[in-house]
Amino acid sequence: MRILIIITKGEIGGAQVSVFNLAKGLKEKGLEVTVGFGSGDFLKEKLEEAKIPFHNFNSLRRTKNPIKNLFFILPQCHILLFHLIMERFYWI
Image 1 (cartoon, rainbow, N blue to C red):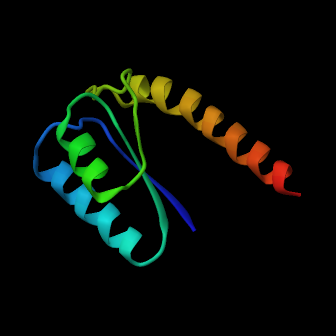
Image 2 (cartoon, rainbow, N blue to C red):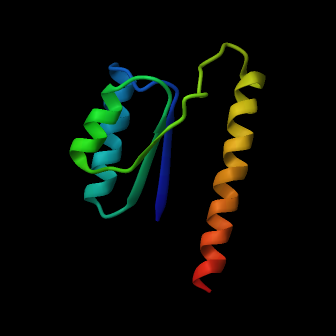
């Protein structure tokens, strides 16, 4: 099973520590985990140490307007969906 965990910021904080611990635990159980995050180096450093794949989305920002958040999420989902479809057909 492949899992993508996304958090808006990569700087140090309680949510980021929880995301790291979750990703590390899932990896230890044998699941394929990738973490996506916005600005900040804390998560990047921790994930590199643990050899957990990650993607830094520079355009990922937290807003108070949930509709504006969709403008980031939807294009990224299309990219991810395209990648997953192409990967699936490549192996057939």
